[in-house]
Image 1: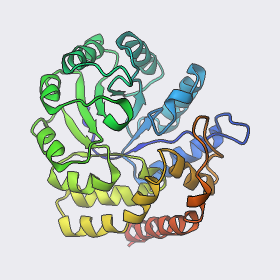
Image 2 (image 1 turned 90 degrees about the horizontal axis):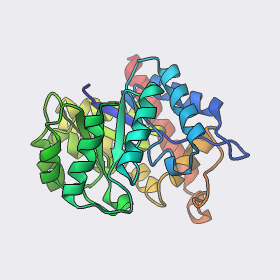
Image 3 (image 1 turned 180 degrees about the horizontal axis):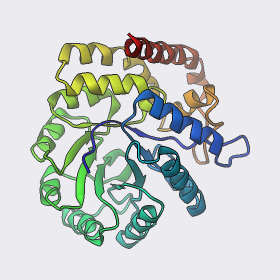
Length: 301
């Protein structure tokens, strides 16, 4: 498996009663494919995985696999705070048809770097699915260091890393491990363009939930080395990035999706977007519409 380009960390739409809205879910999947998204993540942190019951997880993943029908890779979020539970979740994801597992560093428990090596090797050795490492210290409390990735990236079942730290030095260190069997992916929308211009294979994005066409265009430009064009295109999305970071993910992106009729809210302890930010939604939505229309016009030209 070779992961690259624009990959969306999907939000999970709920209906007005708080149940999963499967109709909205399928419409979101359709919009992603129409926009050119090159991979999908089901039940990651953006998908409120911690708030999903097992049966709901199974329904989301099964329906995504059926809908996508092999057109793009489907990654399942399977990371848990315990190795055995992560292996169990990864096996379940395989049975449901996932192409790979996105495995976040164990939240809350803060293992040592040696513990992280043992954790990821055990999951990869089990062989249920190809494994994508996921480092997001701001959510998990632990940091998967480059020297640890150096020990892991040669494993034949470990096929990439999603790195959510934004420092250019971190991305530069990880790019040393990039190869035919290991993809380096940005997990930070505001710095994804810079990362790809430096050589990253792509991005696993929150913003592409609402900007599938714009993010595909960004990835195409940056990965082709068209620096000035990619940077100019990325600059048009800065205000959207800032809005998406105004409150914890996925609160802002779900406010935008709700405006599109794709879900009604979140599950506690997450609350809807604060009133202080609600006034920004129409302008951000208009900017998103303009960017997506620009992508459509460019594709039709």
